[in-house]
Length: 402
Ligand code: NDP
Image (cartoon, rainbow, N blue to C red):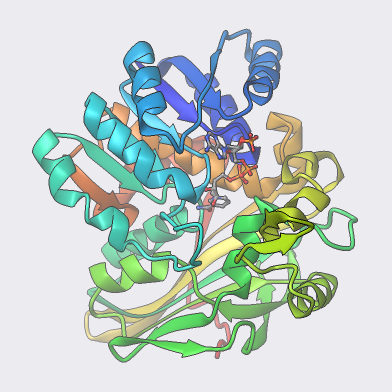
């Protein structure tokens, strides 16, 4: 049906490429480009071996708009699927505008020097994309992404008005390392060390990082985990688009070993994002740390256990209060068996493919810059079931949440 250009050949890029290759009736041609072309070629070889499909590869520096424009003009894709890093969002959006190409990403833009997690820079492109007749779909991963769609689905089918939202991201997987991150270490550590913000009574309230925890028992025997309240970017768009929300919080599970290492690394300054001078060379501590840690894309074969990510939504229907939990459970080893990757990359890459499919099929095609909850959740939810991320709904789950 159409050609896509995927930019970024890390853990998520690998899964998106596999998943697009599995749906040739929609993704008729796939080009994979990244800073290091050898990583694209390695993925192309896997895809050829698994599905017999040829993937073209290219080298590009996605920080450089002219390089991106030259590549997009040469490839002429219908859209770009951006799974590089959040720092590249704006340059890729600029290149898409210049070449008349649709755009999708999985994480909001972050400036290198401040860990802000705000949509304001990308929302500022609304008019430009609308005038150009182009679509930009923001945050089409799992969280953000499927969690936004889960919320929209619950709001559409179970409520007249929603009042409380708790997004709960549990990773019950164990990779056997004392400390490793499941996706890009720099982005992951910036996120979890940032001040916590949650939505309450019409404003964001700040609290210290990791200062509130509780226990959460996942359904279907996945287990009981400590979950910590933290800020996550979908809270900004969801509270904007669902103004009836009185309280919205995001929770993530962390193991004791992860937290112990993070605390020590933070105390000695290894998670800092400001450059320091070392023997006459400027280095950014968190970037140096990334070099020392296991590459997340190598965790697949050794990660065992399941992820359980979902949304607990409370509100009213026909004048009565109710609670609904929409969630997905995914087994790390099943992901590895299918696409040679662990579940964190898998649960991000599948929604990226589905978001692109929604745009290519015209189910979600409209000019402008959109968050996932602004579009009809139903076709996306149907595809989650079909392409590897089946979900369930529990009415009145009986959770005892803070
Ligand atoms: P990785 O670090 O594994 O991969 C990033 C890729 O982008 C690498 O191939 C890297 O190239 C490439 N890249 C980085 N800078 C440039 C550049 N300037 N030009 C071209 N390519 C570049 O990250 P992940 O795959 O784990 O994550 C990818 C994205 O997905 C991130 O934005 C992350 O925040 C997001 N994400 C979203 C989630 C969600 O649920 N919404 C969950 C997890 C991740 P090189 O190999 O040369 O370093």
